[in-house]
Image 1 (cartoon, rainbow, N blue to C red):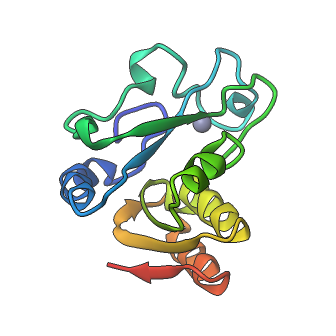
Image 2: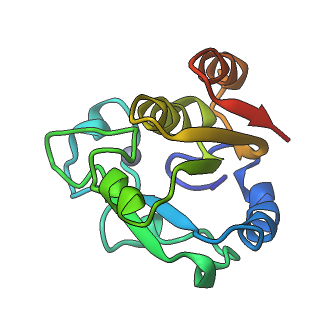
Image 3: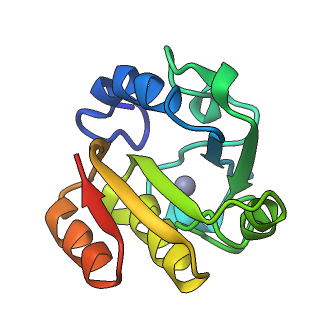
Amino acid sequence: MPGGALGVPGADRLIGKINEEMRAFDHVIASQDWHPPGHVSFSDWPVHCVQNTPGAEWAEGLDTSRIEATFRKGTDLHVDSYSVFGTGIAEYLRQRGITELFFVGVATDYCVLHSVLDALKQGFKVTVIANACRGMGSEQEALDRMRNEGAHIIS
Ligand code: ZN
């Protein structure tokens, strides 16, 4: 969130939109950055989303009652992961017969991008709700790349 250690400009304006979008879906699954203190990514980024600290909590106002499962990533001290794949999420989705995914959140050009690319590689049908995502500065390139790899981009 803006004002946080690794704030994405305008991310606070997504909360209402995401709360609204969640009501349209049968399954809502969350990805959460959840780093141990001293995480390897802190050499490239400010210290952020440290486990069990306020910085790793859900954004204020997010309707978490709709979230049926949360997959935490970046939990290994020595491994950074922009993508939520590799956490067991693919197996979770397959077990429930979920084949189509819609993405919202931040940041479009990092965690959303890499999660989308992995989802496509894993054979999921992917749609990105672009106006429910915000980037760190290379949003358009990220959306173009996702589209080129087979994702649907909608607003
Ligand atoms: Zn992180």
